[in-house]
Image (cartoon, rainbow, N blue to C red; front, side):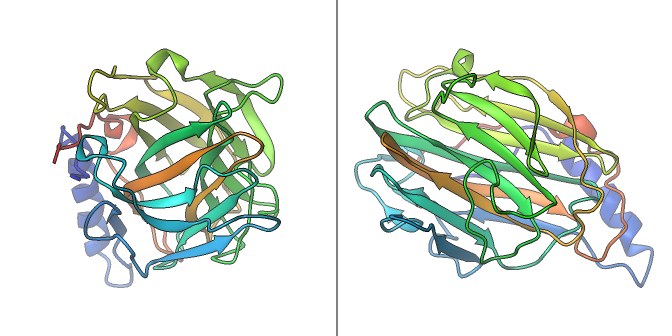
Length: 285
């Protein structure tokens, strides 16, 4: 899998930021993440798995699934839950904590497969202060007072989307669910969630269907803007959670790239902004 952007605009911004930080001897450099769970980072010790309470089964796990061919991104991946009911799995990056209230950008690839009973419930990316022992549902329950959850919800519990994007900030939903069904079906497609935070309360998200599944469609939501309060989220752990209920599906993370300010840090991510929300294509094996 190639975790690379087609356009280089974001990289220009990151270089500018690195130059600024290099000018001050007391400043630490940025944290640049490039995790590829379909290749070099399969079974990475930088990921701490936390089994959910109740009946989590074997979630999360490192899955080598020969039923998913290379057109789907390769058989290896980080599996938050398998397609069994009543599961919850958490996976946290343990390499560093980050200043989530400073400017940052990140994008991760995910894939949902083998739907059962209609497929549910979804997965989420989190920035939270509990650390690598956190056990949470996709909307961030139990993550304390300060957290951000970018949720891919795959079940309509009433008043939601059957397949949609939700943002939860400190326990409250920001705006309403954004329906993702217009850019493709839930199952089998490889999606990328691209996130840029400006350090001032502005979060931009773009969800992209990579169109890798043979005969599949491709598309993107375009830039969706949210106002979030991350002012107190200064020592944050990043990672994902997934959950199933009566219906089930595999929730897989294929990889992630991103640039964050290590805590403590006060650097400004120059030049990234919304130009970082770029179209990426995965290299077929």
